[in-house]
Amino acid sequence: MFFTPTTPAGFRRQIYAAAVRPQANFIEPSAASRSQPPSAVEQDEQSFTLSFDVPGVSREQLVVGIEGNVVRLSSVEGAARAYRFACELPQDIDAGQSAAKLENGVLTLKLAKVVPVSRVTELVIH
View 1 (spheres, one colour):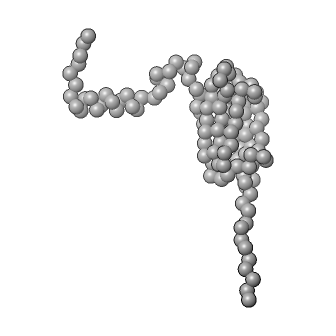
View 2: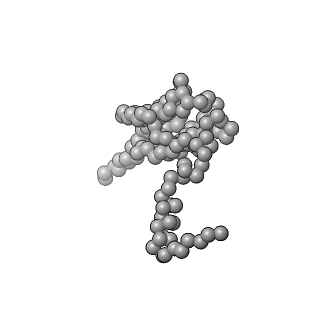
View 3: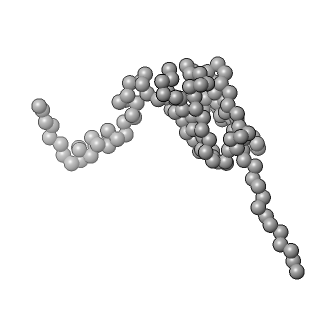
């Protein structure tokens, strides 16, 4: 066994260097989850549209979850490729009015915005 003398400053550098290394360096590329941002993001007054390049998976192998304003995309265990993505949108999503479509390896999510409900109560003046 060989030991290298380390000064406290050198030791901190080694710890820092290990902490900032990307995790992909430690995982084989074939086993790594592909966490990529959407290839296209569009927004209008009624919805958000997100497009993802997800080649190599079928619609049965993808799961899209919506909770409030958080959207999560992942592939099921055992899929040919692993995908994982999550984002927080600036407005809540109406899951009942939203839709997902997979064509030619491109997943398109059309996420309907929740229409704000006015909670104004008028008081009668006596």
